[in-house]
Length: 460
Ligand code: SAM
Ligand code: SF4
Image (cartoon, rainbow, N blue to C red; front, side, top):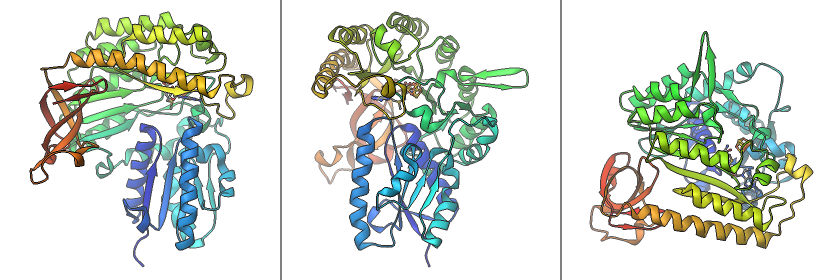
């Protein structure tokens, strides 16, 4: 029999994209085939996100579709992996389509679990029973570490780029957030393993590495006498030949190591001038209810400091609107902070109660859906004006971009007989740039002269 082929669908953040790439590598190494076409797959794996209810609903509707597909393809195996698998566990088997449930900490076992499940044709559950075990986190994560380090270049998501996780989990327990419950406590990876991995990726042609952590600036690892922080990783990775751009996301607004990280950003020409540091709200009362341990004024001070050390740093943010108890006055405070922060762009989310979190247990989701929606639209409009103003500065300027590939609208434009296509890339400051060029530029750097701008995109 030919080797079973697997289709992986990924929902959610960069962490999930990286997990899918790791699973792809591991499956290929174990002899599975990988396919981009769900219709010809023997196994469909859905890598899931639990951060908002909407993300889970999308997965459930995908499962509904797979249930129908299984009627015509009874041998098809369906696995739910990642955060939703950890959160819902066995309950997912109530959905007829689901054969395999595997949490984020168990993904190293996926090739074996799949091989067994295919052979024995039985439902398989692999999740962490107690997400906060007392065992030494280093032991718990040995398997994950080995799995992580084996990351193969062929499975990177975008040409010339790779994500490298520097830490697992999160210890912050913001009151609304499910991440610490599904991803477990914070465990930092050894610096030597991270640097070795970046070196391997560089040897294989990767030019940009993005270091990932839920609170990436709190990365800390003690080996012998020395404690390493993210600034050390950035400085060491800057010396690796072939790596030209280093990015890091997401930063938590706290003093911890931020000075050192910003200084490393200013000192190394390879560290990109980009800071993703979510505020979540501009109201001190809401920030307290969210268990975010800073005030709006402290947050803005951190931004001032960042801009003093790295003057042209581009800042991105996240906000949650409609958190329990958010009055119009508190929402106005968020608008004020947004204006003062001068973000390049913002990700704005409507509050979604997550079962098991403190906000869900203790606070009533008392902001009506239409009010959340209105505040979302209002805040987006405020940010759009700021982004528009910032983007206009680029008119007539030449920017360097790392080309990702075809733009989403590539099929709409250009003479099809031409070798030029509409491409998309990003600058070091994470601005999206759309321009015409040959597809052979994917994964390469290009210089683009900006001729038109919109709030989120530069055109050249
Ligand atoms: N660790 C990162 C941080 O603290 O900035 C982000 C992690 S979370 C996956 C990404 C974003 O989702 C958060 O910054 C927050 O704005 C949003 N988010 C998290 N929980 C949410 C919830 N219950 N409802 C709405 N948005 C939420
Ligand atoms: Fe969630 Fe807060 Fe941790 Fe970010 S820092 S992952 S929002 S608990």
